[in-house]
Image (cartoon, rainbow, N blue to C red; front, side, top):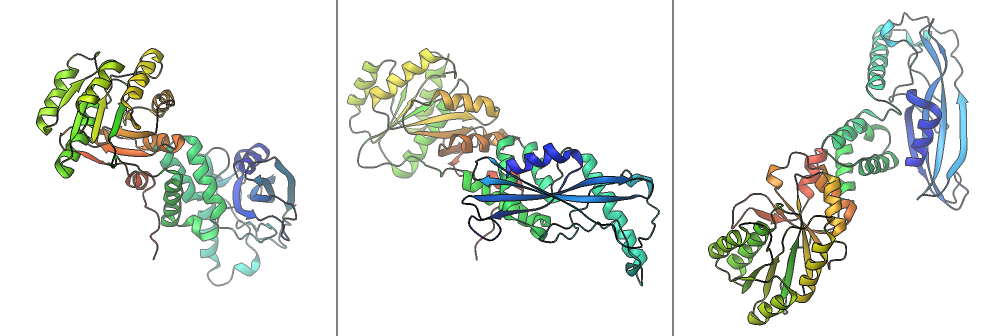
Length: 419
């Protein structure tokens, strides 16, 4: 679909209007090839005649193989004949020069376009004046939409949704993917229904998201590490999780701090340990880490609070990887500040690539204004989200890493509920 849309942009320019999209399954009467295709039908102004206020319209079809593959070479062009004895209409200057056909125009399977700006004598009976007025208003609305948007004009509700997703920080690649899926799977009245468009977009984003994975205790000791840049809230997140297991499960838990860099780091985590009633140990080398674990051999959950590590600090990253390996950490929670931009989030996630069984833990969700980067990072990395920190209180202010509400906040609707 993106390839076909790009053909429309390259060939027809700024005045193109998407009329219809469909998927052609392989080996059927419309597509005899061995690959599935998508087809986009677009209209454009072919021969402008500003003096009469009318325009001759032409339609083209653009196809592309799915998924991926070379763009199909088919490009059919059909000119629409002018109607017999057209009525001359006084067209206001606000709708000149000539424009593309509105989305509401009827399009036959053969892509014949009937411009609604042309009124025949048969249409001027009782109520004909009202019909002409409605058509002119529709043309004016279309001109306004085309002036607001550059390139190919999307159906109004889809364009509104695309603008909304961009405004909240969802990366362009994901926005284009969602729009392409909706263009491929929806036609006609469905694309003009705001609720249907929103529900389908929400379902598509949820389909892209990996499932949430929280910490689960089994018969063996679970060792969990926390990795992230300085100041993102690793210590507070570790204390929140420890408090949650202590209050609900009464499990034996140990907090280990490996932070020997930040001033006051030991005092902060010591305060948290006293509040939630769990033992605190310090380990800054592989040998110290193994000694602490041997001391607390009966502990079922060990949480390791590592010092801050920037995405380009390779020496510190190697040191932390050794500490986690010495502790036998089975999963690492990559702690990401929800206030940061998508590029920084991706840098931190990529820096943790060699760590075992990663989970994403987003902090400062209560302070977040633009939710798009969080959702983009979760989808692009395809790493499960474990928890969301929604405040500074310990214990409390932490939730399971379910991003469904975030999707609903971005598109305005949740997925359609099954009956």
